[in-house]
Length: 114
Image 1: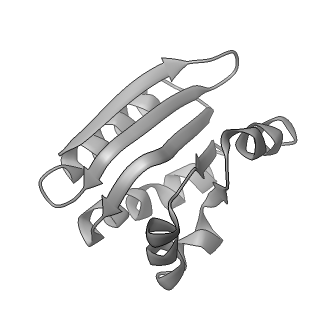
Image 2: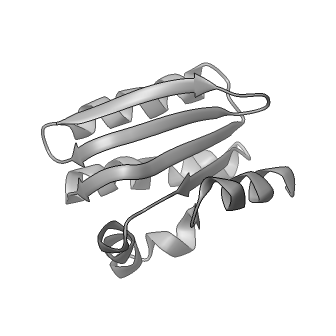
Image 3: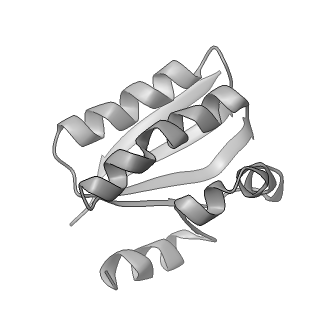
């Protein structure tokens, strides 16, 4: 089960992901990210502080947006990944393709430094 909340901040949209991004819930994650892109947000922070687990389906959602993020110059930053979840991103090399920060402060610094 996954719960995603949207919060519009000053110059960015934050999506907070809570629970488990697995085969049955990855569609909800995909829908939330797609809506953010379709709404024209250029800066998106993904709060993964309460993301307990991510399966290949959940990782696939993030992978499917890498090209779009790059070609549209979207500031897309994930933060707060647990050691376990971060390790999975690292195994697949996604930590090299996506911007991942330790906490919200670092994510905001990266966002404002762009």
